[in-house]
Image 1 (cartoon, helix red, strand yellow):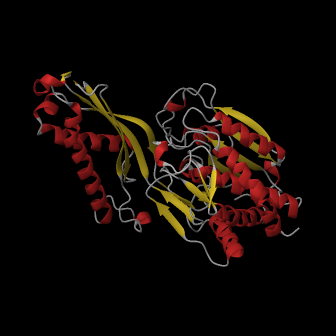
Image 2 (image 1 turned 60 degrees about the horizontal axis):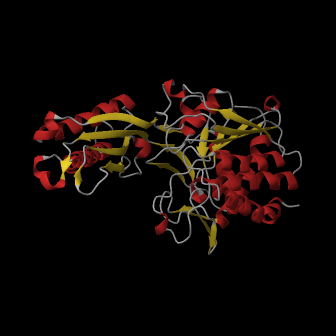
Amino acid sequence: MDLDDAIEVAADRAFRLLERLVAQPSTLGHEGGAQEVFAHELEAAGFTTTRLAIPDDIGADEFAGVPQLSYAGRYDLVGQRGDRNAGRSLVINGHMDVVPADDPSRWTSPPFTPTRVDGWLVGRGAGDMKGGFAAGLLAIWALDQSHPGWQTGGLTVVSAIEEEATGNGTLAAGRAGYLGDAALLLEPTDLEILLGGISIIWISIEIEGLSGHAESAQRSVNPILATLPIIDALLRFEEQMNADHSAGPDSDPAFSAIAHPYNVNVGKFHAGDWASSVPSTARLDVRVGHPASWDSDVALTRVRAAIERASTGDEWLAAHPPSVALTGYRAQRYMQDPAADVVAILSDAHEDAHGFAPARVTIGSTTDARFYLNQFNVPALAYGPRTRNMHGADEAVDLSSIVECAKTVARFLLAWYRDGTAQ
């Protein structure tokens, strides 16, 4: 059977797999159900599966993020097929964790009930990034059908946890030796080749107040209102980072196509438990994109300094300085050399499948490719389907792009194994 015909025949099987994955709400700490669905499919495709426990002390690794909760009972799923020592090897990486669905009432259908609408599959995680897993397996199924014996070296599939918060799942898999001569991450890229991402930290900011009854609020200090100069300071901090990116000491030519790469996002706010009470504390959880020339400690120091400057002009904050701590990502900037063999092979595969060369891009965010490149010296890049509303209501993946992605990935796999020895 022709390769593309085999992909078209198996496409609905891939869509049904995606629906089963999306139906598993694999938010932080609840990844196991989706991992087991995927394990069944990998095993049916001839992979030997391993449930890799994340070490309890992974947070002590200098490149790890700050763990979010216990790793007891949680794991990466690793599938292996073929002889890694027989020729070129490859890792296909993705993450099974998804972000929370926020307010389900804003969705047109329940977020964990996969729904097909006008050629799109709607559901939390459909785009980021369970659709990539469906495309990858679709490519493998089709190659097994159309080109028996195509895989001449080792193939490892890593379904990691905590990509959305720390990256510790992929770091743990790499530390355990689940590596290859290159890594392909099936992240949603709109069928473009993603080469690099920025540095990121997560921080928490806690502001102390003076609690009391609302009737006497004038004698209390509301920490919610005290966050206003802090938020203003964060916005000015963001503005300065991006100004320096355009023309300054922290400019990064690799990201010059992005006008505003460093976003400071206040993603969570918590304070109070009663409308007629002044809260005692307020907490902001913030994601900070920052220049590559700063490591995580330097970035944290600079954020603290910005908050301290804002606090000096406020009588309460000056006497009760906010506390600032790292809470999740400590992600390094990464960049795949565009001249690497793996980039050329993937670009050629896309062009052969679709008739034009793919764009090569960088983003003002990150992926787990950073670990392969920075910690393990493994060439790594991302390529995946088209999505919309990632991390938002009605997140969706274009089903036709899963097929398009599979056509590229299948050609890439053929060429990768055909072209011989490891790099």
